[in-house]
Image 1: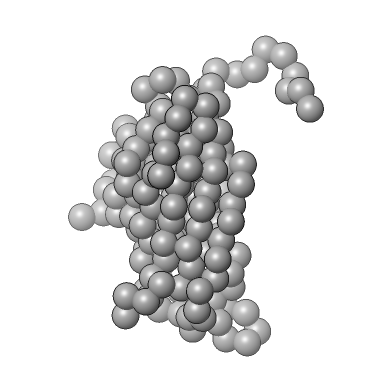
Image 2 (image 1 turned 120 degrees about the horizontal axis):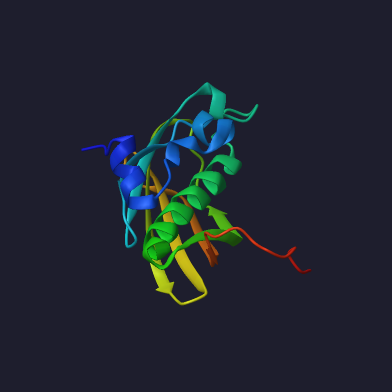
Length: 150
């Protein structure tokens, strides 16, 4: 059962469908969001394809980052934090010409300041098309009172 925006907002503190035109334009449908598991799907169509007729790898990287970010944020929300991606390594395993793509994200480690999540994207036939490793930093929800360093 797909959670409603209100249910997702309760888990995350924000509506994950408010991610902007790029994320929303991907067609990502959230099926489950928690601090220990995220799942969803995309029905990839012509708008997701390269000129050679295969799903663009950027779509895989973006949905992986989105899934890991919302799951990691759900994990630290009770601490007054959210998570931001600091590293995204996405391996493109085999081509897909579109159709239903399922994604599952799970944490590898959830530390005080950082988390590491793995995300798999599979075709309808169950074969993997992409695998991502997303490292995230836990940051405070409160606005900064000083400019960022660096």
